[in-house]
Image 1 (cartoon, rainbow, N blue to C red):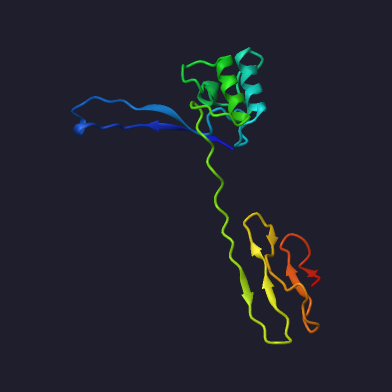
Image 2 (tube, helix red, strand yellow):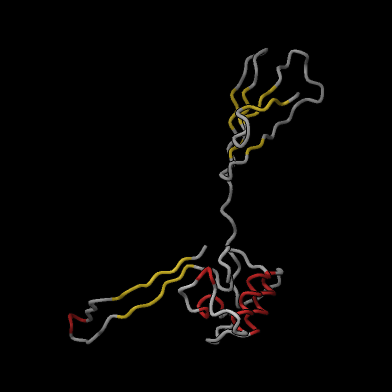
Length: 169
C-alpha cells in the first residue's frame, strides 16, 4: 500500500544568507501512478474508481484520502483528471502497453537453497525442503523408479502444515 507524508523545508540559508529564501511544504507520496485502490496492482477497479472521481461521484480515493486525486491518477500528466486517464488505467489493467504508466516492479527473486545430509547405507536420508519466504516448502528429488527393498521411507518437513509429512517411496 502506498503512503504519503508532508515534507517541510524550514530555516533555508543560501550563500550564507546573502540570498533571501523561505521554507515551504510539499507532499511526498510513495504509490504507483494510477493504482487508485492502493493494492499495488492495476485492475478494472482502479479505472472504475478513477471514473467515479472524474464524474463527481467521489471526491478522492479512500486509499489515499489526504492526497489530491490528481497526484494519484493524472496519468496523462495534463494536471486534471478525465475519462482519458481512466481509459489509460483500464488499458494497463488488461496488460496493454501504456507509455504514460510505468510498469510495476517485478517481485523480488526467491532464493532456493537445498540442504541434503548424506546417509550411510541402510540409514535414512535427511532431505530438507527448499524454504521460500512465502512459507511454502517443496521438495525436488529424483528417486529411482524401482528403489531397493532396504530403502527407508523418506519424510518431508512442511513448514506450513504438520511438522512432518510422510513421503511414500
